[in-house]
Length: 118
Image (cartoon, rainbow, N blue to C red; front, side, top):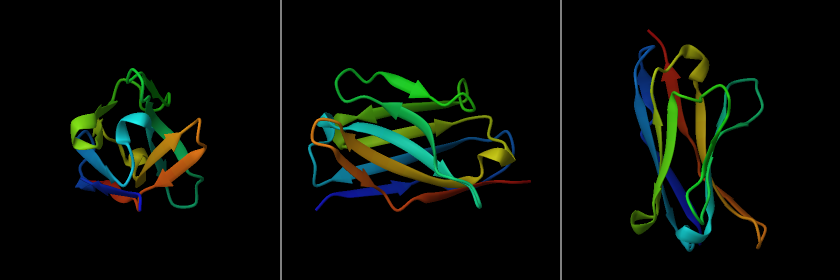
């Protein structure tokens, strides 16, 4: 059974930082591209950042470029999202996603709440 478990969310002041973690189990982690999505109240889920399985190439949404960093540790089956210079617009539930293109497999975590407020 595949499980993705996010952690690290919480309440932070504007300008602050958080690091999200997502630990995967039940799959060969190194073979999956990993992504972080977010969904704010009343809005659609949107892609925040992605990192490939083969060479850890990263990609970011324009609204987080220069502020967020995605990384992975295959030995720990973990993907991270370092979030700096947070603003209230970053408030959302953040979801971890594991994607295997060739097998068309797609798995989601339960999400972790990030609230940016003074």
